Length: 127
Image 1 (cartoon, helix red, strand yellow):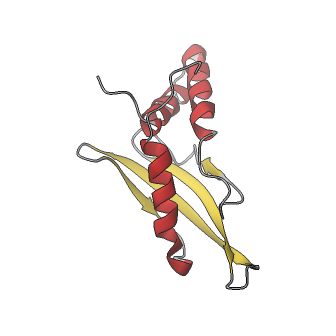
Image 2: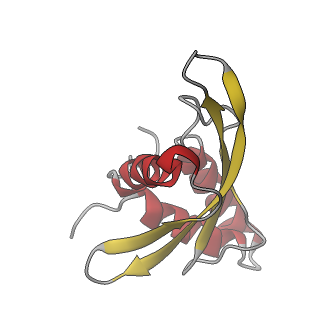
């Protein structure tokens, strides 16, 4: 059996959190914390990235992030806010969509860094 990716572990954690059993929910929170600590932060995503649990389910995970743009002189030049939506795909593991303004083609960069983190093999508990 193939090792689980971060996105697979996160989907399972969301299912556990939404479960009515306290024991299973606690397990979900631990896995959720382990994976969300890996979400993109810095390098323009200066506010970090979060999971929108209210809009997420095991079959559709919604992330919130924002990018802090710089101008040609190296000064900060404003923010763009983005939603990253991930859904499973039987062929390529998952599809990822980035919403929000595409200032300086930033959506492609955001998609690339989220794909990289979410497709990584998840560490086993306790590693």
